[in-house]
Length: 546
Image 1 (tube, one colour):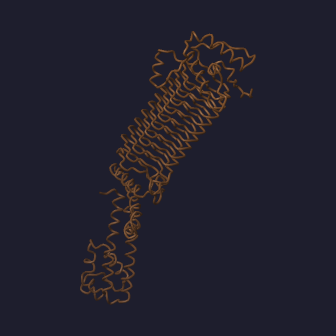
Image 2 (cartoon, helix red, strand yellow; image 1 turned 180 degrees about the vertical axis):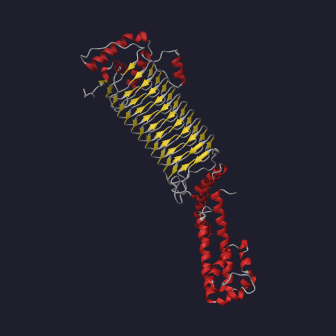
Image 3 (spheres, one colour; image 1 turned 90 degrees about the vertical axis):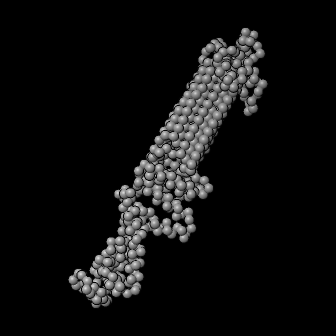
């Protein structure tokens, strides 16, 4: 006999295991279906669900097919006891033979080491099945099986895979604290009470398409190395996947969550897909890390939704955004507060966002939104416009203008070079209407340039000022201050609406100017107008004027 792990007993020293494999164990790589059928039928007749009971009715509605021996329990009694004595003696030698457990006793298989696959397809169990703290060198299979009481596999280690496809659990299914090196398959399984897979490790795929859970689904603080497939799953109780790590692709498409859903601090290290998923209660994705693409198209968020402090790290391409909320509906307040979109903007095309939806903006560091231009550009620009309009309705003008600036950057990047020049000028000279400093600096540059040109001309022609100011009220000793006159004339050209030219210089003076200086004066006036407009935009934005 192979060495047994410390604290564990060989499976064949447990009477329940011998009864499950009464006519022989599954020792080869291939399943002996005739052997399995004999084991299953005698078990189901002796220890399985009693015919005509409410549990049989419930399991029948769940799709479980009952396969029993053709003989009754009374007819099987002698044969059953003889088969048990024979199997025990062949497997355990002189080890004292125990009595056959009572039909209504708990099926205790805890702290057992299973060398061969435990193949229980089609078995039915009327009492609690306890496989906790056990070691499975090969797999465990219970496809199409029916469990009426609690099923306990907590703290087990399974070196290969576990498969409970289409099984029905009328009571609690606890597989917490497990280490499964292979895959875990629950396709179309039905857990009418809770399902607990918390604090566990799974080395390969978690296949649970069409899974039904009537109460709580708990996979808190678990690690999934392979793909997670919960497509079309239905969970009526609370769904917990917080503090867990999923390294493979995650599929929750068309799943239906009736109660609160928690993905707090969950790490999706690959794609996360929630297309068509319905969240009927709170959906909490707080501090969730999405390293791969995050897809939520056509989702229904019927309760409060929380993506606060989450991180979206994926990068989109020209054809497809990496973060998608297209056609989604948010029925109640939603928070993206302090959520960080590192390399890509989310797509909100045809998305129905709730009016109370929070986004965070840090205009100094831009730590919450990508820097520069990201792909796809069209969808990114559209997203900025959608968020801008939402923030405008909330009166958050500074945050609104942040997204307006982003929108203009994407508009500049989406047109040809000739058209892009106007966007470039708008951004460079005024930061798209947000800056006061830039237009003031531009006006100062134009003013100083005029001061130098006009002052230099007046310095070279000192009698020009005296002649042009003749008969007009003017400051004394004008001819001695050519640069002062040049500064005043340049300044008056920058502000034509105030009429400084007419008041302080008059038509005669302006008419005396040489044609090049007249041209430059007009040019100053024309150039100053957009700078004055940009200055007005900056003041309006700074002081929230309307």
